[in-house]
Image (cartoon, rainbow, N blue to C red; front, side):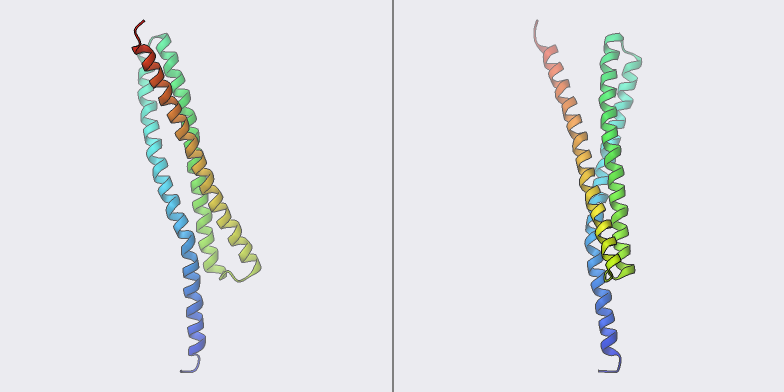
Length: 160
């Protein structure tokens, strides 16, 4: 073996290990990106519903306008839950990116770098979990509204 070959092989092995370890957070980042796509789709649907309800309010009588106003309040709650989910996912994604960066920069060997990795990856996971919780809240608000509309439709359909 030529002189210095062992050191070069060890250095390559170290770099390969760092790349392998840094791929793990990238899977979390991929999941977060998928969540953001789902949140975006839900946000578009809620936005379309807000537009439709707003048009109905303009042409509604007083009692129907009150009903549509309650629908807007429900849609606003859903928007707030989605905003929270998106913000948490974005923060989780940024934290995960910081984790990957710290792995490349610090080689994960020092005490300070280990704490930074624990903090950034932990924040990424916590934010991803919290964004799923916020999304669950939005979904529950949506299903509660749908159940209420079904119940109202059933009551209107009953003969008096």
